[in-house]
Image 1 (cartoon, one colour):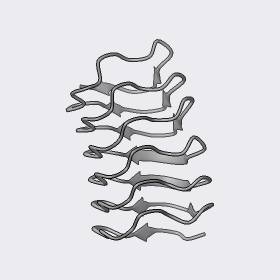
Image 2: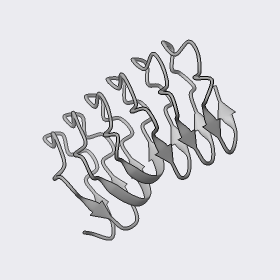
Image 3: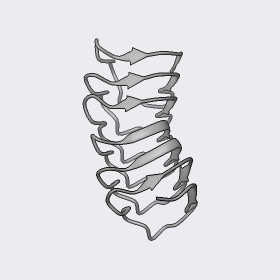
Image 4: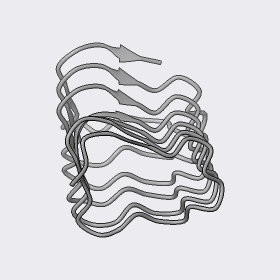
Length: 132
């Protein structure tokens, strides 16, 4: 368990240890070799994965405040029933073709630049704005 963790631009990082808990913020901005997040990851405030171009998915049990997946061009899916307690930023996720059933975003959802995303699930819950 750590308070804050920042590994910005760590191009050799492929995964995180199972059960990692970060009290506040975890920034892995530009970690281009990161392919997956381990099960049991908990981040109290913001998880920033902006520019993690090899990331394909996130675990179903992810616990996070804000989730920044902007420019994760390899992201193909999100798990069904994912709950984001703050904002979800999917800007520029060009490989994302759909959003999962049961997705809950307590604040704002950003979808700009998601060129392959054609529709939204009927049960999508967003507490704030949807930006396209």
